[in-house]
Structure formats: C-alpha cells, structure tokens
Length: 257
Image (cartoon, rainbow, N blue to C red; front, side):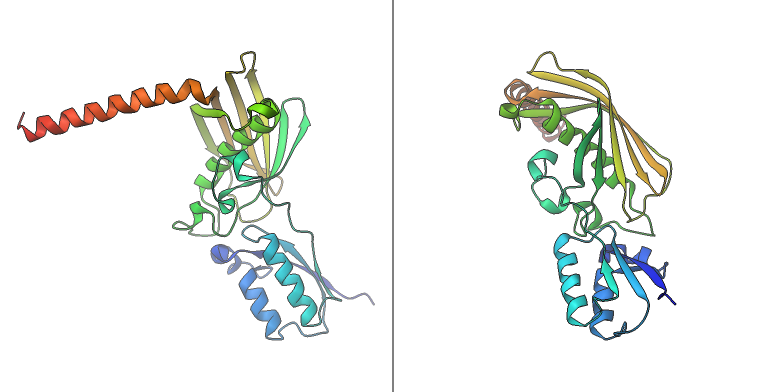
C-alpha cells in the first residue's frame, strides 16, 4: 500500500499570522525547530515542502541541510525554490530585500510576466503586517518595479540602461481579491508605447497580480522615462522654487505678516 503524502507550505516569519491559521502552512523558523526537535521522526508520511513568500534561497538551502541531517530526506522533498529577484538596478532599489520581481520574461508582443517575490525583510513589511493577507502597498510597489524592469530590459538600448529618470504621470490600482503570502504571478501588458525619441520614452500599461486562479489587483499606469540630463535640471529648478517659497513663508511668519 503506498504511503500517504502531504504538502506543507513554508513562509517567512513575518507571515506568522497566516501560518497560525492553516495547519498546512508553517514559518521557516517553526519548521526548522520542529525538525531539530525530532517531531517528524524517520518514519511517517511523505511530505512535499513548497516555498511561499518570505523564504529565500539561503533559507531553502539551510532547510535542505537540516532535512538531510535529521535523516528524513527519504520522505521529505523540497520543491525547487523560486528564482532569485531581479538586480537592484533593474527595479531601482538599493537593497536586494526590497526587490519584488523575479523571473521576468516576455510572453508575447507587449506582454511580460514575472513571479512576485517578497523577502521576509522587505521594507513594506517591517512596520505593517496584520491579519493573513499581504498589504496593498506591496502590490502597488510591485507594479512600479514591474514597469521599471520591463522598460529597462526590453525598451532601453543596452548602452543607455541606467541613464533614465522615470516619472509617473498617473497610477490607479483596483484591489479585487486578497493577496496571501503564497506564489503569485504578475502580468504586464503595454497598452501604448511612444519610443520614437530615445530621450523621452512614454508608456501606458496594465499590470495584474494573479494568485490561485484569480486576479488580486489591477494597476493602470502612465509614465515617462526621460534621459537623466533632461529631467535633472527641471527637477532642480522646481526644487529651488519650492525652497524659496517655503523660506519666504517662514520669513513672513517670523516678521508677523
């Protein structure tokens, strides 16, 4: 008679509120503790471990080592870990933990897909994580990173990459379903691309986040990528105007005007 089998989903400790409500979801720290305490023993059902959000490749390597060390590798299979995130230059972040996009690829003319990848120490989780779902600002930031990465990789000449300043003209996100700390896909559809002038690239796009057969959110965005030299002067002039205006107000308040 074949052994019974079970799938456990492993998430980061930030998502303990989710794991505590579902017997087939464990945080990486809880699973490691259970393994090292001998909870799973050498005999029992076959278990497949599936990575959720908040678990890094390094976490997965450590988990694999512990599974081997405690002698349960014959019945505890680790599914492949998701691809590591894109480089920080493509998503315009400094810390790898804040990159939300992985496995970016083109799937058709003007259509791109990527995996959502949420690091346990992502900046948006550090001071806001309640309930079971992933907060909406993660979805908004993932949409922003998606349009940056698609533009940098597929619409900017290699010698010009990193030389653009992106300006959002408008951005609207509709939330349709909760997003949970499980595998999710991002689909990016270019609806307009004005790329005739390499000093000024203009786009509109729709960005959907999908999970468990449902669309969780849809972001409609219009943005322009300017060559840095063109926009930096304008930005500086407007910043100087704002500072002058604020200083004038301060002087008037100080003078009792």
